[in-house]
Length: 80
Image (cartoon, rainbow, N blue to C red; front, side):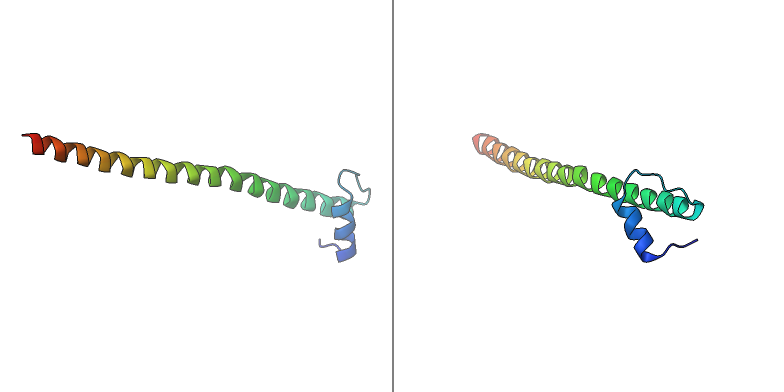
């Protein structure tokens, strides 16, 4: 089931060369799966950051709008 450490290293280094023995092929598949998961995780992290930035910006804009509306209402109430 599990491969030796140097074998794992070798498989990590060799990206797309198919290894012929069944055990090494299995470890290769496992490692490619792991690598893909890591890549997906990395890909997933970035848009979230931008999303957070957008949310923060929208929050700031909302607050500004609220304060502006509040001021306008106060002025209107002054004129009454």
